[in-house]
Image (cartoon, rainbow, N blue to C red; front, side, top):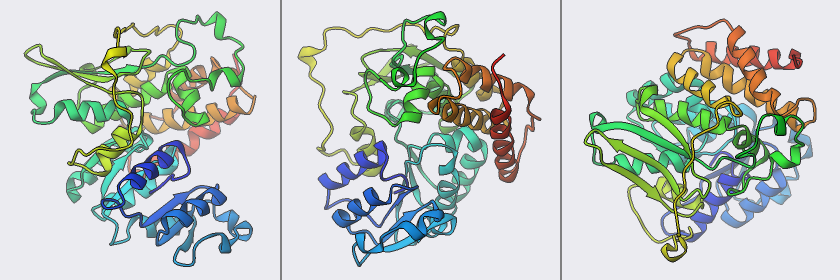
Length: 378
């Protein structure tokens, strides 16, 4: 499991905790939070523990890990864990483009992927899906929206689908105007009204860039045309997505906002069994309310649809620019509204390649981050 100390990783371990007869943890991986990783290892006693930040080697207390757990470090450790022959399923829960290489290596060796790292498909969707097809690999979505779409589409052919509609909570700034968001502090952007997430994803939800990235993910994951994808705001986060079929029927997946449900569906696929996720209380479900997206206040949405249409290097550039811009915002070096403006500027100015290699995508990622470091507010 890549990203075991993050929000998705901790929820995935709770699923494993409830299904010890079905889930065996072979390896756990974190970027730098090695003390939390060691605590997880003492409970689950995996064969491997990976610390991706190799610079921490001198600081890690190896005695904090159980004796049966082998410590791995850096990019070599990522490949070793991703390709271990005893691993059947890899949970890819790293935040950001950093999750791409481990997921790629796992696909190359035929592992089933439980994908929470949407950036893998945002950056390299065409190449990743081609590789998965060649290797006969199943990619099971963990994002609640894409899990909902997959559930609704099960048993139906692609030509049966008219449109998919991703729902969005609207984040902490739903209903706000651009003028009201001009000087919002970081702590307000982190106050998500529905989900408990890490800082980067919380800011992405506040800008609605998270939904833009999910549009791109859906385009590749389900082989959809961009015009077959739409987004609607649903503050309660009970309906996780819709699928509209060509005959006019609409199927939706409903459940409380609890990530353990889509995680369990991916980890135990195709079985459905009782688990730790909350159940929907129909008696308290008075109404289901939906709103249109305010694209003027949240222009990130349009960036997502543009990238879904153009493909090529645009996904790598948008994702890298956003990651770098959010990092600057969290550090106090960029205003909230400048995140989307910066991404727009970097996307517009990059050297577009319609058919990049994996190496070309990684190079585009690096250049986009460099551009953000030089960007100043207009």
